[in-house]
Image (cartoon, rainbow, N blue to C red; front, side):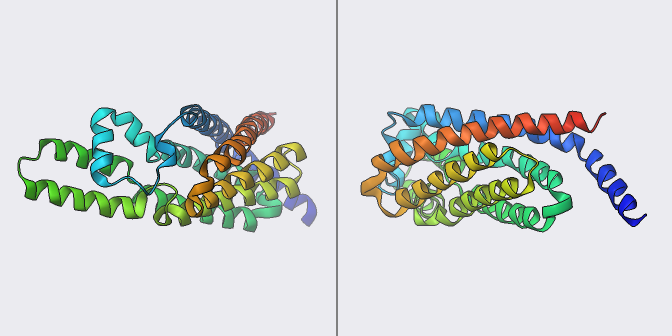
Length: 252
């Protein structure tokens, strides 16, 4: 009797998650598109190999020349990716609630910590605002103040520098953890899970190398980031497909 009651409660709880599954599937596709655009724009980009070396004035000049290149180089697509991934994590939490609720919940906490740190410190939009003010400044005092503000923002929010490392590192850890939960849960295919484990591990290693060993940046980008990026794109597609299937299963 107790077993039957628990089973009924589990089925009812899963049914209540059907709209989260569908939202998570659409969000996974959005995250995939953001990563695909990031990969396509990354190849051949000269800005991507200069993290931590440009001054605020140089960033202002880049923004003045092409504002999109500026916000892209400073990680605006990472913000889009993180926002899109939030419903994905909640959907995966719902899918694994009956057996791995604690692990999935801790993974959401790690990801939320990473997302809040990254978005609050990211330099893309603040530098855009400061660059506009810098171009309109009339005195040297104003320009000096804006440059100082820009340097402060860059010190805590420029990608692949010590200021942004913790948030990017935790984001990578969360992605690997949720893939491990998917492997143990049996709801998603093993191929789906292993693609995530390997792909996000490669991307995490790329983050470490890009931040602390800039001399190896190009190698890390064309080997670790490229392979990891392709695997991550596959993970998004497979995860979205399975979440769509779960949302449809709850209707029958």
